[in-house]
Image (cartoon, rainbow, N blue to C red; front, side, top):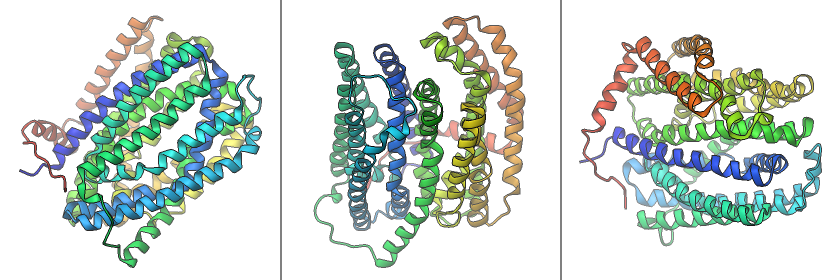
Length: 515
């Protein structure tokens, strides 16, 4: 019997979430040892080079999303010849991208001093460290295109498990090496080798799982289809640019205006947020393939119904996690690495607000991309990026770190937070978007009220120990979920989610992989 979308979602979600919990734990062990042996300056340098190369990844231009979107119909139809032709186009594009990133990265090397306000006092050569970061980024493009077929075939869990196995091995070797040598360059070199090994493995496994990918590609895509793909790529390039500016320039601006020390402290908060986001992404992205398959149909009513269910569950998740994060993040860092690594309450509130605003976009973002709505809003991310740079620089000068974070929130709220759902409703559902913003306002208002109520509860329970921190987090988690369920229990979306959960265990398991 054919697996349902619910079955695929459940499998991807459970495996994705489980592997990311392991990733989270390993990340904190890795970071703790890193700080103990190397300190804040290396931490800031690591964050800075990561962000510089994130900006360079603009060269990817969003080709990945365009290719995955073009694969959905072929995966549904099991058109192996067309899948192979699309993958061949993807492979060629990614080889060019990897080479471009490497060359542009090399051209930036003479100007590294412009990105660092106070150069770190470390024995290693900054240019060698940067070159290894650049090599790691370039390598990640050379074979990673094979991952697309797993995503399009609703088998995101294959990528998740593979990444976590390689990350575990890489982390164990890195920590052992760091303990023995205290050498940062070797630490980064191990990461380069790990990235290469992961991509080679996924490429070989894709060839084994989808045997039709091997051998020479005989069918070519029609010129009209190639044109459509690259029209989407042009539009996605603008989205890619906006995303990179939003996510990749903050550390650069902080380093330039406030120094590497602040970058290092801020990076610990980002590590915690990123760990949570990564777990959520693995879980929520597990449904992207199924949503993509749904959006190849003509059932507009069904699409909107599932959209509302997705938005409801996402709002519930971010309701709980945003409030929990605000209450536990400073106590956690204090107990973990000490008070000298803490940021002020206002800054923490801004960090969590940014996390919440970004997360609440997931449903509209996922539908926009899986519906292929790339060109309709292509200028919006450019406006968002420009606004973010201007506001971040102003914020850094007058308000410091909190000004930079608030600039990011404002830039997102006035652009993609409005436009993404508008595009989905206007072009996907052929409806006005008013009902979406009513839902958004309702969910956000409930979050704000619960947030205010949570602070005295946590302050009463937490007494400066790990035990009371865990107890406080557990009590809040329980109360928040019960509150949300009580408020929205009778809502159709809530009842639909409950029915889906009950049905998962009753589904038979079979494979639908084309081979």
